[in-house]
Image (cartoon, rainbow, N blue to C red; front, side, top):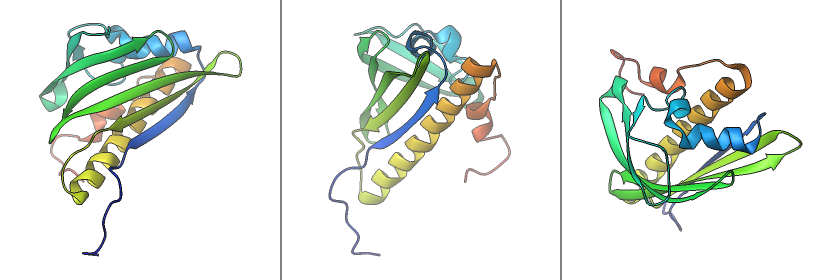
Length: 160
């Protein structure tokens, strides 16, 4: 395996159909009153272009500064947030789908490090954003809080 090389930096990508209109799905990511029900536990404010926002995951004692690069209502959000070797870019796209549904796609790019670190960051990000989308789907479609992010790393268990 020592001869394996990457020809380009990986990009984490995931997506999910949410059976709610684009406005509702978009608002779930920009309005912390909604986002805190399926992702982080605290936020210093709403996502707006040019704004810096602090997101917290109290159960993990983690807080990160997010720089909002672009907010295009009901269509797209772009942020920059810290990675292990510098900032990475996260982009959400909200595509109307058959009536009042939305296909949400999320990509995370700009990873840095050696090949093993790049692959690890991309797979971790893909897993994390998949859990976020599943939690959002349950919340918006069924009014259920699954606590997926909270339960990903329960206290007392070694990380997998």
